[in-house]
Length: 321
Image (cartoon, rainbow, N blue to C red; front, top):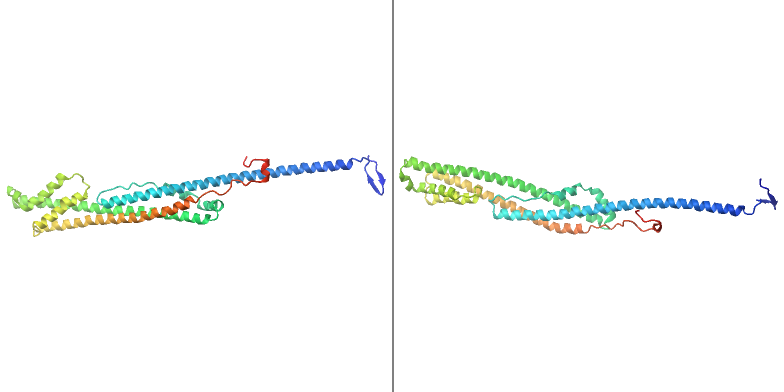
């Protein structure tokens, strides 16, 4: 039990060390509590730094992937536009030859469609600097342009190819009918007019028709070469009938009219193919021009956001660890 001594109306403990001990204890407790609070606060900062670094690292990876896909798209557009330009030049030079279009899958454009555009926009705003919105809009403007362009180009090629194939099939059908009619006329001269006598060999019309048929089949090397069909059979037949003045014969007149109909289809095939070639040359040349502008926008992409900002308390730990 403490004994108190009253002095000047106040009291004090018997021991003179009480107040210093109390003060020391209070300071020690305060330091301990403060230290605990500082360690706790430091842990929070460390976790925030780690979260920030992880997010920044992921953002950087997303931007790099986006740029990679965009560069793949650049390469795709460049190659595909050149493929179609070469195809246009080839079909224009050889309109009657069946030439395949060596096209490639639109994988870069498909990958771009799968990227979250809204997320990428936010990334641009936080990592690309002051002109981020403008550059982002430009990039997607070109993406939409290229996507729509190839959709339209491929649709036009498919549509025109079907129409051209239909014309070629019509040509083949009418050509077969013409050959059949020419053979019937030659046989009619041989067995109808001359009754099978050798005199048919000297008949001018028979000589013309039989010679055209014989030469055509003997010299044919490619059954798909419409130029050969037209020049070595249809044209020879028409010129022979006109120059030989056989048009007065009703059968020969019908043969000439059939040849004229086939020639019209032949010309229409060339007209259709040349129209497709000119369309591809015009459109793909425009694609290549826009490709230059697209390249400028893609090259502007960078990652200006710092992975972590240095702070004074980083002397106590390494951010991200």
